[in-house]
Length: 216
Ligand code: TYD
Image (cartoon, rainbow, N blue to C red; front, side):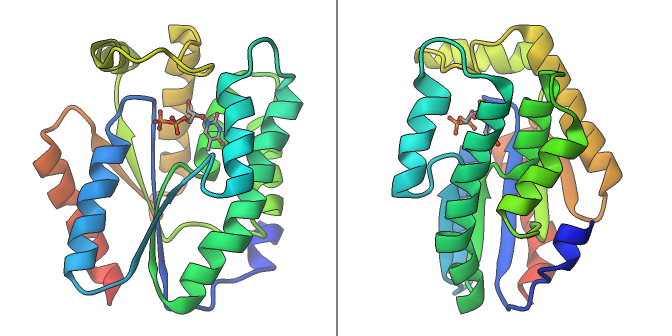
C-alpha cells in the first residue's frame, strides 16, 4: 500500500469510522460513542462523508439526489473529491490537534458501493480513495452488519423518500454487504464487525470496549 506508506500518521488523535449498509444504525452508534468519548474528557469531531464540508454538501446533493444517470467513474470521482477536501480541511487538522474524529462512512463505503456496481474494481476504487486522502486509514472501523432485507424494512418504517443509492435493487445491497464483510476479513486489526440486529446499548458497549484502549 504505497499511498498509505507515503503519509504515515504522526499525531495523538484517534480516527474512528462507522460503516455498513443504509439503515444499519451508524448514526445511533456514532452518537452514543461521541457522548461517551466527550464524557471521558476528549474533544470529539463528529463528521461524515459525503457532505462533511461546504463543498462536500454540494457534492452530496449531486451523488444522492441527482435525477438520472451518473457514470460510475464520475460517481467514484465525486465521492473521492468530497473525501479529498474533507480529509485535508477537517479530519487531518483535528487529528493533528489530538482530537477524536468519529466519522460516518469513509473509503470502505466507496469500495463497497462503487465497487459493488461491478463496473469498477475494488482495487482501483480503493487506490483512488487512498490517493484522495493521501493514504489516511482509520485507527478503527466499526462495521454494522445487517441483512439487506432487514435494512430495507427499517428504511421503509422511517417513511422518508429513498435517495439514489437506497433505491438500488436488493441484489446491489447484498453485494455491498458482502464487500464490507470481505474488507473486514482482509483487515481484521482495523475492523470491528458487529451484528446490527443486537440492541443499541449492547452494540455501544462493544464499541466502547474496543475504543477504550485506543484512547490511551
Ligand atoms: P447517507 O445518507 O450519508 O448514508 P446513510 O445511509 O449512512 O445514512 O448517504 C450516503 C450514501 O452514499 C449511502 O447510500 C452510501 C453512499 N456512499 C457511496 O456510495 N460511496 C461513498 O464513498 C460514500 C462515503 C457513501
